[in-house]
Structures are given as structure tokens and as C-alpha cells.
Length: 419
Image 1: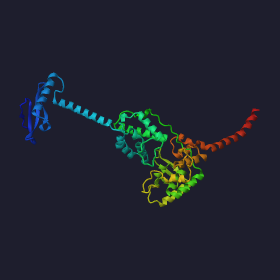
Image 2 (image 1 turned 90 degrees about the horizontal axis):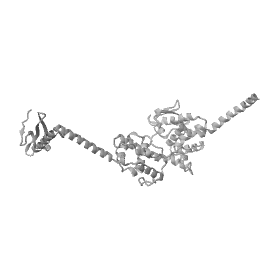
Image 3 (image 1 turned 180 degrees about the vertical axis):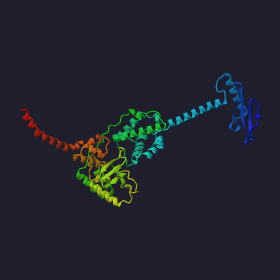
Image 4 (image 1 turned 60 degrees about the vertical axis):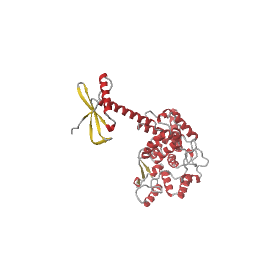
């Protein structure tokens, strides 16, 4: 539908009125300019009075375009001017967003982006450990720094604080600051690296993380302690008195070599009583393996099966949910039995993982080869199983004696031939 245009006191500027919308006491007016370019009449709309346009401003815009056409500089059409302005606006917005991202601190990103992602994709013990390291050791040093401001000096400071046990009192009073192990220090550095890489994927930071030139702590956390038959019997008896479920969990680890986490996720459909096997799905090294039950474990699980109300988890916490960590009662039982009295080196102290270590040690002592032990434990490489090699000295000594016996019979025969 055609509109009625009205002239203004300014040549080349005209307007038409809105049918209903008003600007003050008058109907809103839409302004346009008309001019010659390359011998052709051009007309371009500018905007409404309610948007700030007036006949005078429209005339100034027309004069600017004519001047640009005359001297050959700048946009000569309103469309070109708008495109340039749009590019400028977008670049300004982009720069503002870049500045905003560059100002995000490590703590802000950890709490708003990384930690929620970790909770959604990692196990509770993993993201719980990361949260504690962040809160107690990482945040006090680099929490208030934007990513580009974090340098190797800050990471070395975190290492030094953890080695000395120096931190702010950000934990309950019962949790006193103490020097941390090389494993924990390396874990803290790994958390920083993971947060940094996640921030890079999100476009928060562009460069590599600053820890590439920071040396990791040397770690030697191979446990050398394993239980004797007598110690294991005492431990199981005391566990039975304390908690039937904790006893059963410990029995599986001791007789089948399972990690605590592998036991916690066991369901009844993983058990094959006829073949006496346990199916372990998605274990620590990402693979599925089969473990073999001892007769005692088989009987214990059959008893529990007869009492089970459903076919779900074999072991549950008090709320009927999956167990996430070994009960503190295990450590209390170990303390009552004085199994760690006088032992300061954590590698020689009894903990729940000692049961799996004992299982492997007993196998080697019985003459089982290391490759078989590796497969039963689910180790990725034989090097991980090599720590048990010294325990096979008895079988190696017997093998040497067997060879020596054959040499005693062969040597005289060789000597006779040489005469």
C-alpha cells in the first residue's frame, strides 16, 4: 500500500507518518534521503523519529554521503556506512568478550565450569579428591589469578607448600596441615593441568599450561607389606566381629585380588557360581576381566544370594546405595590388632589395599608365574607386577637346585669323554 510522503525544509529529505504510533503530540515520522549517484537517483531510508532521527539529522547524513562521493573517501552509500558500523560493533563486542574471558580467574572457572563437568563425568572419589586439592592447596595460591597471569613460579609455590604442609586453615580443626606425599603433589599439578586444558577447549585461554617446565615429584609408592596367613586370619576374625559386610568385602579382596572399587560395583549378574567366576566390567585400566572365586568366597556369596532381596548390587551402604569408600571401621580394626605399631613408612602399613597385595604375594610365593599374576590382577604391563618378583625366591631356588641335580649327573659323563 502506497504511503504519502511529505517534504521537509531540507532538500533531499522527506518523511511519511506512522498511522497510529505517536512521537510526542505528532504521529511518528520515518525519514528518508534522496540523492544522485553515478547518474542515477538513489533513495535510502534512515529511521523513525522515535529512534532519534529528525529532518536536520537526515540532512547532515545526506551532506556527509555527498561529501564522501565528491572526495572519494569513506562510505558513499548509507548501506556501506551501516555495514562498516556493524563490523565495528561486532569487533567491539568480540573484544569485550575476549577481555571478559581473559579476566576470569582460575577459581571462578573451576567452580562455575570445570567442577560441575567433573561431577557429571567422574566418580565421586575422583572429583572429591580434586575439590579438596583445589580448596586446600591450589586456590590459596592461584585462585584469584586470571589464567594468563599464572606462571611456573605459582606451581612451584604450590609444590613447596604441599611438601612443607603449609596452608591456610581451610579445613576442619581435626584435620591438621601435614606434609603431603609426592603422589598427592603430582595429583594437584594434574588437576591444574586438567582445568587449564578444559579452559582452553572452552576458549578461555589460548596457550599451553605453564607446568610444562615444572618437574614432577619422584614417586615410589610400591607397597612392600603383605599379611602372613596368621595375620590374615586374625584380621578376618576381628572384621567379622565388627561388621559382617566389611568382613565379606575384605574376604573377596584377599581371596580374589579385587580392588575395593571393583567390589563395590559387583552385581549378582556378574557372579557365575558354577564356573566360580566374577565378571569385572570397566575396571581401573578400562578393561573387563574375569576373577576366580575361592571355595570360601563361593560359599559366602551363595549365602548372601539366598538372603538378597533383588538382583542388584551385592554390597550396599546404609541407605541402600552403592558404597563409595572403605568403612573407617577397617582402620580401627587394624589399629586394635596393632598391625601398624612402630611402622612409620606408609608403604609398609596395612590398609585395605594390602589385601589385594597379599593375594598377589601369596600367589608368587606358591610358585605362580608373574604373567599369570599380572592377568589375575588386571595390570596393564608386566612391569606393574614385577614388584612381587622377589617373593618367588623359594621357587627360583628350587628350580636352581633341580638344575644342579641334573648337572651332577651330566658332568661326570662329560668328564669321561674328555679323558
